Picture 1: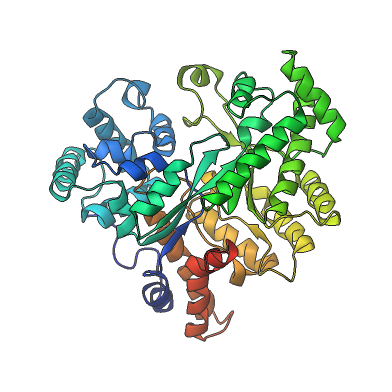
Picture 2 (picture 1 turned 45 degrees about the vertical axis):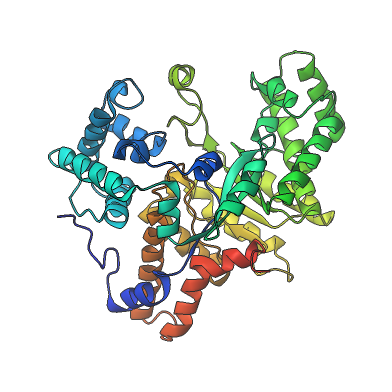
Length: 460
């Protein structure tokens, strides 16, 4: 029997009332994820629990590597069954790791399975879940509908095929899927494939050509429902001049080597130029920064991007972020932004900076994004809430997302909601805030769903 019970993470009756009366049944908006829109459209049934649980999930891969599982049982040629058993073995002793909580919640919510995950129970879980999948013919959208997901923002490259979104939103009436406009491929000027990505946009001979092509593509994204963009950078760099960026772009087109410093100069201008473009079209701009990418050259060469070899960068970039936002603000080109930070040492720095660029036209124009990636755990969420209530305004917070490639990840929203309700419930019990439960419950509902729907303009 699993250790997860009805009141998991809810330590008092007030927390429980907030969760069960106000949070539990709220719909979900997943405004940043990496689900495949093609898989949503095709809506195929799963062959086995490995396919839905482990395939492509580098969060789980990282945990298995930490435990000392051989790579053959992670991304190698071992059978799905053997890989699943290896994961259960690693997870069985990963006490308090969020994956332990998430995985157990996923079994309960989607398979009605209370078996505790460990090596001894692995085969039993394998057989039970595979039988359940076959009996109920669970497909990708089965999990979306069961979790009451109303909006999904996938993360799409500027050159992606957008016709899929029209087909999805015609096929399904229970939820909407919109693309978020991502431009990282055009920021990373030093990448070997940079020119290959340019070619996907057409004939690009100058920086102006690139910016014009990206703006044209953004308009196409907007036609199929796009209301958000996304950029991922290791750090925020000073805004250089357009002339400097244009020269560096020409240099790269001529196949000359771009230095690390030149790469930073180019990225500094491009982030500024793109944010200015998003302001023009009122696009909510998600900026993810603080990830140190591809630390292991050996494993990058073997497995490629997004396989579990990234970590937290040291530089918080707070001064450069301040100057970037100020420049855009002075020009009246600062878009609504969601700042996702990966370095917990910068939480309060960002919260204090955000307050300098708010706008009376919005409830929270500049948002501090939820605890992200390596901070997406109980401790990280609690710190995030503490810092937000210390220097920000919790009432306008737009809540959680999955940031996941897995269709099983929606219990992470309920995980966050439990932590949120317990955080506020404890404060109520301690006499630190209002005792008006219904008023607090309304805020819980807003954070769970309503604020994000309003922020992204989806309630029109």
